[in-house]
Length: 247
Ligand code: PEP
Image 1: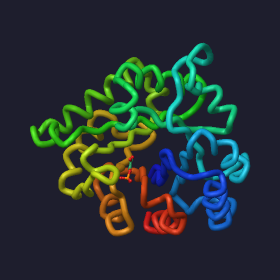
Image 2 (image 1 turned 90 degrees about the vertical axis):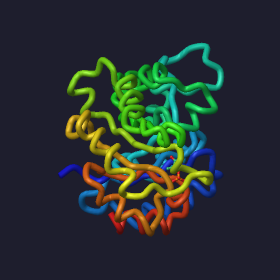
Image 3 (image 1 turned 120 degrees about the vertical axis):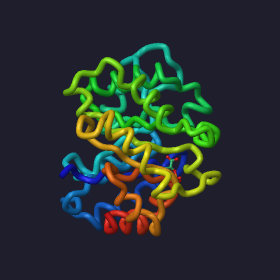
């Protein structure tokens, strides 16, 4: 069986001191190896990437990511960070297409496709986020919508490339302060649809959105779910460690 991916993006949170405290605590708790069958990952802000890498060490069982990266390798793209730069700073994963980037920063299906390709080109793991809003859900279009987002971002990949991609299904109505936790029932159909389209062909099918210590076990029990992508609950290290225990 594939490892369960259990990880967090810190979004635009944590000072370097806070990043150090979280990471040092994780390293102390885990030692040299991850719990059996678990693939932990952490995605700090760009400013903390090298700090977190230094504390994790080079051979850490915890994968390190960035929350975004440009599709070009270098150039006149003020304010952007490229995949080679992220890799140089120690990243192994690139989060792509989070709904906050789609909503506030003009991320489109086409830019997610370009970014997935850039991550793969440089040997990093693309963590592609997809998810529908409340209106699409109310109209019954959830599965069709997320399949279209995924197909657009993964267009043109061969089987070997696809096998390196992780997909995180994060319904917009379920994430962040404005979201409400999804029920297991609500998630069965979208995950069945994703599994039919991608199943064993990708490295993981993760769920994200208001994961907490009370619902994590049930969410991990949903057929085809191979991990959790966690925001708020994992920002407190003790709760992230508890999630690893639950998994
Ligand atoms: C997210 O925004 O991707 C997310 C999963 O956040 P939270 O767990 O805080 O809902």
